[in-house]
Image (cartoon, rainbow, N blue to C red):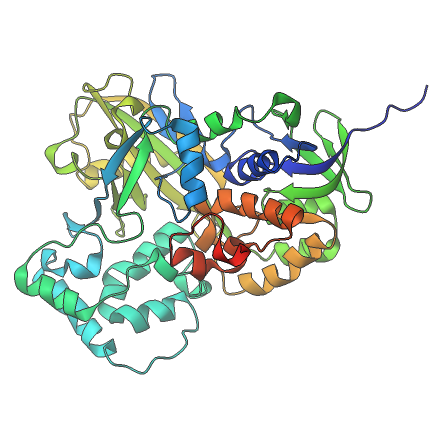
Amino acid sequence: MPTPAQPHHRFVIIGAGPTGLGAALRLLELGETDFLLIEAAPTAGGLAASVVDERGFTWDLGGHVQFSHYQTFDDYMALALGEEGWIAHQRESWVWMRERFVPYPFQYNLHRLPKDDTWRCVQGLLEVAGAPVEKPTDFADWILRTFGRGIAEVFLLPYNFKVWAYPPSAMNARWVGERVAVPDLQTVIKGLCLGKDHLSWGPNNTFRFPRRGGTGAVWTQLAERIPSANTRFNDAVVAIDAANRTLTTASGIRCGYEHLISTLPLDRLAVMVGDPALIEETARLLYSSVHVVGIGLRGQPPAALRTKCWMYFPEDDCPFYRVTVFSNYSPNNTPEPGSTWSLMAEVSESPQKPVDAERVVEDVIRGMYATQLIQSDAEILTRWHRRLEYGYPTPSRERDAILEQTLPALEALNIYSRGRFGAWRYEVSNQDHSLMQGVEVVERLVKLRQEVTLNQSELVNGRYNPSPYPEWQ
């Protein structure tokens, strides 16, 4: 019998997270219908998906919030949930240390610290004020040059190891941009003199969250706008033949393509392609895994937590680097709004920071007691745990040189690796950035336009980006 002809598409997209969905939706808008979106999971969302546990609590795969640098992203969010599907929030983020809460940005609220720590931090700031500007050798060097030794040792160095699971000295400083609040000495001194809290710094000082369904509701709703003929869920890509432009899925389907848009982690993509040079280069990329632990409780949050969004934990009395009061984002994240509440913790893991997965949930609960997030008489209704192998794409000192070699080498094979781990650029890896990487790679392939987000992170992060971009005019 003759061998059945394998399907062939102009575009194949691997992954139905924000990047893959952005690519698919833009193809449809441009009238391109010859594409297939393949997703290993049964539903859309990727790392932005949500889960409902057996007790009815909703959990995100990490501490996501919705804010935007792009008009296009905002248009898609309105398309997903309308105007009524959101709850707006004023950001309240805090640092728990020295058995007290300190508002973030830390350096503007030093009056909250014990006086010896306050002076230590101020002394360090004064020492670096007016110092010659020199290019930092790494992220740790940038912290010391920017904040001084006091804030570095009291907060930033221990916290950043805890969140990244690698020492800051192993990371470059080029990714920082708007991610870290750079100190203004006048504001620091004003806070000290007036003893007044300084809150809500940053690009996400206001944000919104889906009223129902967690963050994943956004992506499942957008996925429903893609015709079923253009999607294949619950079927993972297992092999890529770049020379012949075909791929194979776990179910045995072989599919040809003209352009392949991949949102797989770059190191996994290299293994599938099978090029030894690509495999060797991408194996040098660093990343951390994340344990997400959800604790659902009876009652209501204590007064100290009722308006807080998320909290940072730099000290050793708990395993987590961040905890979100997840029921504050939406009461519908719990099964009985008004009678139940929830906390969601994140614990990082790497070869340099191992985690015992069998003990992590109980370690988190002990840490919540130690940091006064819950009391000993709290009634815990559910303990939910998910380990994400790929959590944070680490901006290592070697990262940019690796990407400069590997991304163009893949593009020479008509493979475009994009997204949080596809492009491995943490500075453009939020949900809005990730969706726009998918939109922009399609604009490049169909309309020959620039990929602004991938290549000009400081530009897109330094403004609200209209649609279309000025660079496309």
